[in-house]
Figure (cartoon, rainbow, N blue to C red):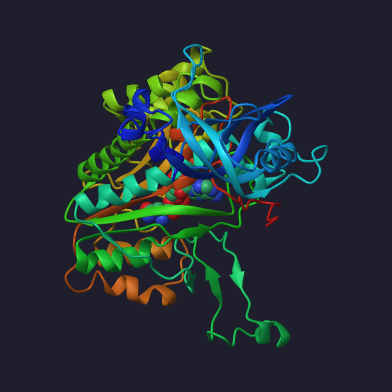
Length: 480
Ligand code: 4AD
Ligand code: MG
């Protein structure tokens, strides 16, 4: 039986625990790893967890008070155990004494299998809590910790929530190719793929007859899909060869990208805000135990903060307003910056974080950035040819979570943008072709999923993107 079901308030065995007698004892099979282990002469007290629940169950063996036949054998086996060991056992559910905080205890009557800790002195998890920063050096053991397993469970739930959100809004799930011959953003930070023979031939690119890369974004392909399916999304990984060794950058991250037809900036902002709120709500509702744990020990106040995000309207400000606010704050000495961004400059991560975290204290959506700053595919504003209809969603303690825009649907403008930004049109003939026949208004965005996990589980004290996925791959770091 899974611990999650055993400890659930719907479990009839728990509801009727008062009525269990020697005659109607129920034998339960349970497996897991020991979270605590204590021996008091003839008595063993342990807590067990099988990963299905954030809560543990107390398991007990009392040599002098058991009706099983193989008392000495069980006793000898239990002596070999310690924190972290695995055990598969049979036991009887018992109502704990009045003084106990537990809902239920399990008294062991048989041990089926066990996996002991061979060297307790060197086993990192033998003694209590280990800091997340230290566990980053032992990634294969991280899911055994309460902290990391809570994050991974919320991560899993948020993926479900995203799928369900898109499904409810008639988006189709399509994962385009990861190996590509275009570099999407034209940013030049791509990992190149080299086939074995090509390497021998001195990098002749024979395999595909041209250079190929790991995708930095599936957006352009998704736009083509959306041109028929109406709305679609992917959960593909994206790869960035940026040499950024920060708490927010990975070299490979899960990129939730979405595209939708027949709408503009308002539809884009509504969709993006609703999506984030839907995921937060689902996670808070379905991961109650994980949130209680995080709120108590690692990310204090997270439940209130996330509930606050659900209640507020995400503030929508134009890039122009953002620049004005930054200038006023710097003048009043409320914000210190190395270089003050002027109109046309990137806001920079310091200003972005300050706006969301300190000034608005909530998620914000900054729209209509200068055209010169943004990618060729973003749609020029109808009334101002200096700006494009794009939106970056900025989150306190995370920074940029979503990069998005309305897509340029005018063939001539798209071509001119590509030429101004020195983008080779040849590999993107097909993309231009989409604007030749039946071009259509459409919009979309990309969400860094690990950053979303950071938003859902961490605060400014503990946010680190390396703790938002099981095996992070980042600049200078690819251990597994
Ligand atoms: O802003 P970006 O670069 O936008 C695009 O790639 C668009 N083509 C997306 C689209 O419109 N379909 O990336 C989108 C998001 C960022 O806001 C950030 O959350 C995340 O992807 N991201 C990263 N996450 C982790 N590590 C990195 N190195 C990241 N680079 C971007
Ligand atoms: Mg961006």
